[in-house]
Length: 333
Image (cartoon, rainbow, N blue to C red):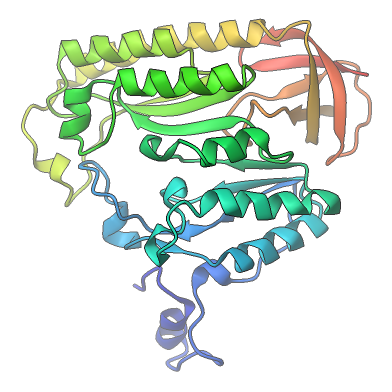
């Protein structure tokens, strides 16, 4: 067993000698050319937060942010290899740079990546934003830069303030709504995604009703709903107030009904509008792609009804003609 801290420990275990040139951080290993017109870029490893339910800090360690120069080199190589969209990820993306004395470094990084637009980069997407950090200048950079798409993947986890405190998390439904509404005033086309834990120890009916009300008021484009699962060694695993499995399932079902309705309404509202589609490839011979509203692998897709042979990596203007569940059907042109 070796940790995430560096390739050096792997070399010493497997080869029984240090690697040539000294240890290298696993974050800096060379990347192959992308197989799709988008690619993930991890900008940091580990997390400094102490959420009661999360075991990540225990095995990934404290946050370690990469140098912006290193990220830019990797992104440039991926763009040269055909990536039109770069998806930035980290366990706590919005805290990028804080561990090296540069809090707020994510916004300047976005400005640097925006400079790759002349080399073929069309989009930069951010995943996993801790809500307390979603403020200017980061929000301004997301909304104002040419390449950064207005897609806000917010790590909310719940909407009940008492339960969030029990989770050792920041925020409340009221604060989250204020944030979302403020962004929508500045960019009505902004898209929002989040994930929520259902049945965290001590969750009451009032907590559940708070989350139901929040979902209805927030109108998120996408939401993941997950039953609480105790992780060994976390504070939550030893908490009292376990919620009965049948109750958790009932709450999940109620929340899913609300969110499915909202997601479908949002997709239906796009019928008749014109969109810019990044073609990802094809499924069953049908070209598929995404707008700024859909992250790769987790959200819906757009399918071209006209069956044209569209080249992956191209950005095609299209009209939305129908919605089928979370997916949209579009016609190019």
